[in-house]
Length: 218
Length: 120
Image (tube, rainbow over all chains, first blue to last red):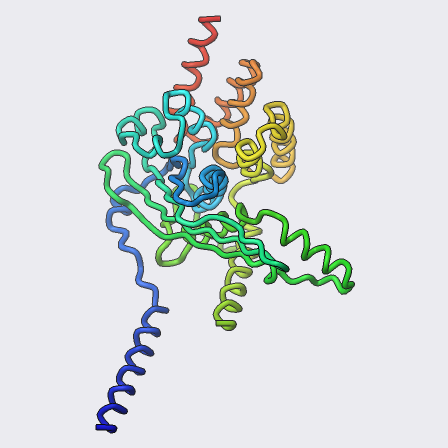
């Protein structure tokens, strides 16, 4: 009986180990639809916000252009698009997320739409530190076919303790730490979350038309 | 746990520093301005946005890099808000010249601007 139990424990332990190991191996994303669509331009719809932070949608929106454009895509001007949608009777991101794809294509000419849903967003202030956490879901959809081209989670956590203060004087460390605790780092966390999701090697976006292969020279 | 977070921070430092030098575009204050215009609209009014973005334009020229996608269109929208239709049109056309993918949006903006002028 004891032996069987022991064996059982061993098997359980090993299987946890194996499952744990497998988790580290990233399964590449299936890019079949993406490669067929080959989008050049992306329009970002202001994110749906499921967090309690009122400004989350627009803070997050402001951090998407850079990672998408640096991946080689034309990104339509986010604030111009937002303004246009507002002028056309859609005052909030929640309503903007319901526009039919044909309308989006007709007015923006974009090949693909990026839909974003914010799940967690904010900064927690502890006694001596603060933590900024951002979690969202990204979905890229073809405006012509409605097909899902890519999706990914995006996550970043910024701890004010993690940044190293290289200055040797105690006073400067304290003042630096204080500003980091107080400073709102959710924009930075959003930018990092997006960068990691979009530029991830096997699960991020494929290179867009403006991203030319790296030069071999030098 | 400590190891994992160490690894994550090491990887992120590598990633971020690695991309620091090979950016395709000059970004300047564009994303900050977009964010501030929503979070603190009183501090970042139209005139402030224009002057900040114009400074970025000069810096971009010095750096030899293209400005980011959407930059000229955003500046064009700001000039339109100020009533400067000539500058606005010039900026919108610049966006279209740099990025032909913007044609549908820019043509629509130019058309609406013309109609508005007709009303005035």
